[in-house]
Image (cartoon, rainbow, N blue to C red; front, side, top):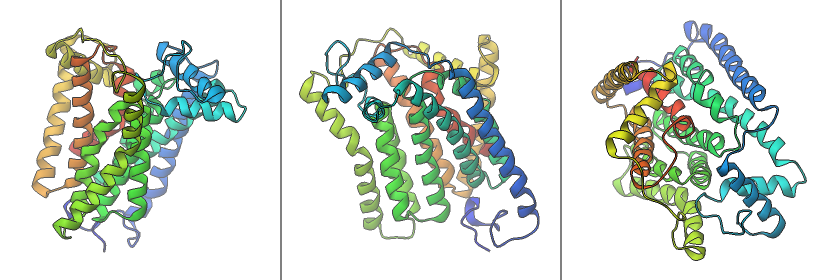
Length: 364
């Protein structure tokens, strides 16, 4: 019986295709339930956005830059200023829709709807592998499908829906590769494509690079050090290529590679508290500081249990998901401390919803 799908490799896989009985008896009900959750998330997203996506100043920059690309090939906002504060990926997507003669505002509703369903499916599949059980995959899918952050963020013309899916594709591919102890050619291609999509939609997508390097390195255990270093290095460089081109373009047309930035208004304590409040709001909504602290403490205890179990069983699969969550969280807090941004809230936290559901499930 293959063991590569199980944590630590010390026990038979409970959902292996070579097994009959209990594994098969729960496969179809849980798969059907996950499909229902994905369809429900899609339906809610459509109902929230059917009258038009919400527009914000960032939305207008995306939209005007995309239409300028379609009309003149110039990545610039409606003021004629080159767009550098935001990456080129989302405006390029809008431009492609405009070139095709479609209404970008209508098409992006359906993009967000599909992203909502894809995020639920990815959470279900990845949690099933990570946590050794289809029931845990269903729990992760439910956490994502019922997330307040998903429904409030996916109703706006923002880059986060596609970014969140791209981030979870990276997580899913790494988890699958680590369970097989092998990075296949298609895994490398998916990692490179998904990471480039993420960093071309949000600059913070560069925070995925440490997890990609470590995940590929760990998946190559048993091979020579030189081969592992070569594979991890080449895939990581490929994953960073799109962002590198984007940043070089920005340096050529502006003074700063990520556009003009202004000093932060927040200190370390405020930034960390905003992050904790946003995390707690995922489960209990906006609430008092005491309840938020209790939720964060319970989640911290759960993560500690997960870390202890992963360390005991030398489970690098859990570790790579943790690296993704920590890298993104650290980048988010550092950005708050160095740049004047909107406070950490639903929009910035939504890419963490699915990875955090995996980590919490593992601890439970």
